[in-house]
Length: 446
Image (spheres, rainbow, N blue to C red):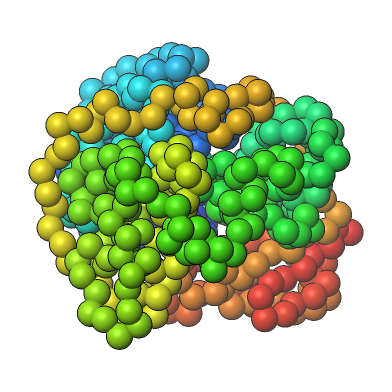
């Protein structure tokens, strides 16, 4: 491909591309690194989400182009597409596109959880293990997901900004679907596209059932990092755990933890050689003092990926080590504490203790909600969108339009200051700027 890495990075930055499946790290920063392996995470870690597997099937050519551009930008000599073996149509589509690309290969993953977690996928696809509290680049790997790289191809070839988001609406809805909508569309609107809910007391999750967050406002906007919308009954265990307060979680841990160690034996990070022992952290939280010096064991909570296996699958008495880790992480980060433990040997049972998805779904009572959610093509735009300035890691974008301005879909409406980490923002519909506040721009269609 006759294009240089600086041009690729510049177009990726100008397009406002961030990691579409995670915390929203600006992709141009990843593309500024030097790597040996460029890894595409197409595993779709969370059950019930059906985005990347379908995008890989129907946009295989764009995905391969995105990989090529990523490899040029990072100097990587090898490209790997990590896909679960059950994504047969996506694999076939990509194999057809990879003819003539000997430096890119497909790595088949088992249908287990948490295949798709960045660190676990790197280990599975390359054999390399990322040390605790380190980045994938520490082992020569850069990772992007499918939707991100499709956005990269569009940006490099057509200078197209990120103004749409593909997401799955699944669970207890009339017609589970995967759909692409303008950023700023509300959860309520995509829920209507799926025919509405089928439970009298619904609760909503943004993302997957294991790691997703509760949606408390259906009129909140879909952003560049929205993973999906799942509908569960209000009394579902996964919802009850998310609404449980920390005081009761700690009290429960003190009262009923039997130190069976199952949470540690099944912890994916512990299995690949991270110190992180959830059962010992639970014990330490039960007896720690306010002024004590924290041990390496307790500080290892900072390396928890929050995959949810400990609370949703491992613990027989419904304690949540993950929630305790979340609280500790918040406390330690506020205090500026860091974990500096080294990588330990790989557990010889590691590959045998990862969870089959079907068994996980049965355990968390979602086996009857894992619908296909086919990707549908619709020509639809909302009459109104809310576009947050901060849809990424870093500083928020600064608006460059005024109330009353008329803008076209794709126009630049907010920028980053020179040297700031972050990405610009573009209009997702054509219309008029109705409102600008500290957090977002509201636009209405003419």
